[in-house]
Image 1 (cartoon, rainbow, N blue to C red):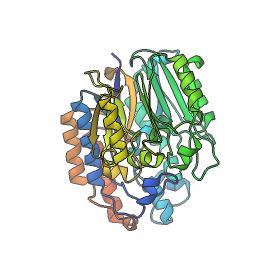
Image 2: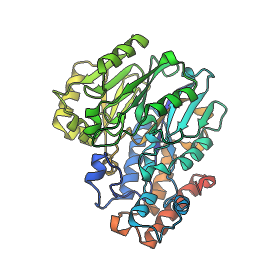
Image 3: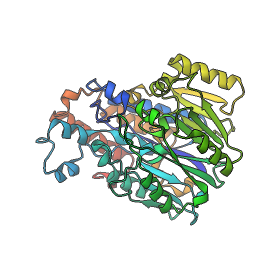
Image 4: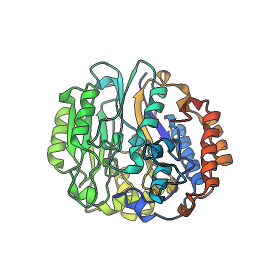
Length: 417
């Protein structure tokens, strides 16, 4: 039976605030501050527990090897000799943002009836451009069943940021859906990371029917305001599209096309007069997980920052009180990851599949999360000051921590990738 499964990235032991992501306002604002990897990872575990308590199926993706010695070697250096910028780029824990791991097309949408995943190349940002080999190795292990096809990334120069710029709408997860690829165009103060050519390549690779695919351009205003991915201003699940009024360059045309393909779609648009782009992005209102628990109530899993931002919380309360399509709000604390520029939706990759077809090492229940939390408590650094990233003792602890987690989860085949 096909079900929605959210695969959360476990926040790695090298989580730090180096401010590497141009256009990500939170990451830039907190550059140079002390991070707390243990607290960050445990907050992520608590979010996964909350999902389980809602009756959702929960999966995990594991931290990548950091520093990335192989990447440094290809740059003809090593960690000790690398410049401070290269050190930081090789140490980044950004693979925690599982929404950027891949684009996923479930079996009901594809002409061969298999679930297709294309690993994102993430080539716009140097610290993320070397993630894809380790991600590809994990996905090919987790989704080795013939029910899946795992594709390598779209080649350069076409930037692809994965599910963060992709939405799927459907009458039910086991029904054929409409897949929406959102791309940007350059010219503003921040880079447009998703290229239309990459979107089109993924749609072809996934064997999608062209008459069930839409390509929508993200608005220049959204990118300029700091919406570095579409999932900072829009999210979808089943029949519901939840978006800011200024999310798309030509919203009227996009909405009309969407309604033509899916007449029962429910578009929930937050007007700029109620919630500005700046408040939406600062609070990560739309970087929420929009899910449907077994009880059937569309539920929004929000960061605390959404509740703390008065215009955002006021609009949400009015929507729920007005019997809108989103019926339930759940608030989670992911402050440590929010400070690095990602909320609840950034931390997860949504896959619609039969859980029985997935390698069980990548699925969790409360007992398995207990085991993961124990490793984090024992091995993750309490704090990392960016001035410490050259400390050999810190690097040894980071590498030991990841090895301990792989051992606990019987995933040592991923030790070097």
